[in-house]
Length: 132
Image 1: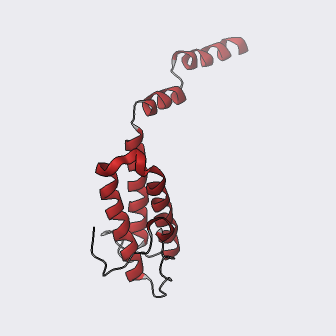
Image 2: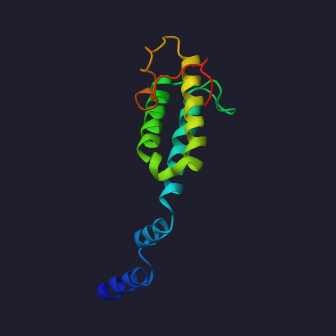
Image 3: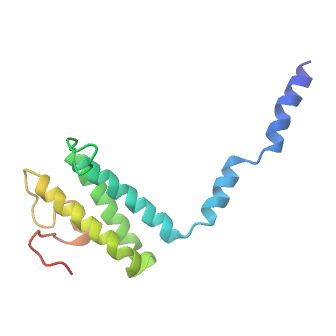
């Protein structure tokens, strides 16, 4: 009876595809620019929420978390600039700059020039600087 149970329990498993191989196959079909852009958008969204910019959660602010997320976003964009190309990188850089400016507006203690979130990758961000 034990052999019968173990055989019947293992048969369905043998007939199902390995979920990890399906995930790997799906990821293999996605261009790197799409994966990088998606990761950047997740970082941007999370930073915006932590800056209190989410419409459904405007009272939430966590500047420490926002700083970490903006730093990660800036590092990702810096490291992947060549892979993204101007067409994909430009709007992501604009979003990064907007988050950096929002951080400066939200912070009660100003960072030294070049020390704000992500500025080690982007250089100092100034609210009055003309956009390029």
